[in-house]
Length: 125
Image 1 (cartoon, rainbow, N blue to C red):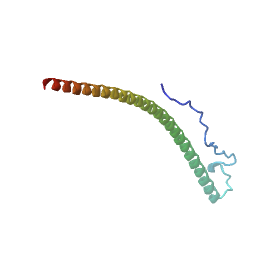
Image 2 (cartoon, rainbow, N blue to C red):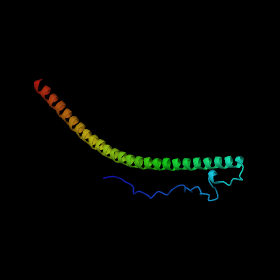
Image 3 (cartoon, helix red, strand yellow):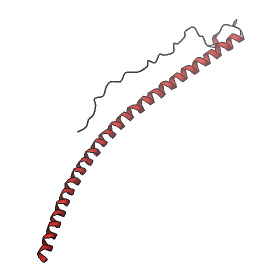
């Protein structure tokens, strides 16, 4: 018999908001020829930064998914550990009861032996 608690549905603590895709950003190779080299390099730099940010967010999502999976496994493991501890506690309780019963029997035998010894000594004298 286990004291398993019903699983409560877990609510996400945060909502992941996807980074919006900007349609007005054109790759640097498709910029108009009149665009200066400085603005072209700024555009490339911004594009690389946004790509890096998107990659970092994707890595964070993967890490968060792995963390949630690990937490779910931990929950299962701790539940199994709780069940094991309950069984262990029950076994110890049973063992304690057996030891108490044996102790009472041993004390009764000791009392009987003492009485028998006293009786035999009295008969000898």
